[in-house]
Length: 293
Image (cartoon, rainbow, N blue to C red; front, top):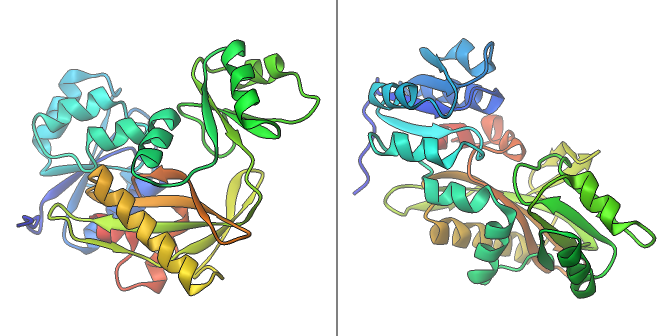
């Protein structure tokens, strides 16, 4: 049985940005206090939270004190060092856990996990040097996109590889020791599904939405997505399958490409509130932030 968090409990949040702020505001409406842990100063989440610890993610004493001051911990972005999560998890529960983050922080692990549970992705290959890049090109062809395996977002840490481009120069421009080369997908639109899963395995999804980007940054989300009932149902099924297989506790945004023949390929997973889920604040009985809290 899932244990409910009593009112007036304290939720710890790794990260103090806008997603942490909106999570803290939702938690307050539900009767919870929040304690933010982040290395930065003057952060949005601190303005609406009861307590803030400003310390690096490798400060063992600060992490342990933080863990002892809260009843449970969650996070606003997935690139929290796993070592920090494990240190806190030795004292109090952290959702999502380190195992989820280890997969979602690394594109190679992420694609391997997805393919391993039967989820389609763009064709891809691991790249560590110019020789492996040339081997990946032979497998995938051009055009393709070279992405750093870790830390890239909003178009950062990636570069297109088109006919006539210098492969060595593209590899140098990405500037990462570990990368993946992904084949281009001729997709009709990009959609995402927010999924929530509890400790007891209960799971639910919000409707699929369409995402439109400008310069690699999400500009517009249209809810619900203008897709067939079959595609909408399949997108929700994929998100629920991923959440169950990865052992998610919390919320996750699953980004997907819908091809012109209505196939669905998963692009990436974000095990935390997602910008494409902000519409749930005003349009749904429970927002992504309330569901997380």
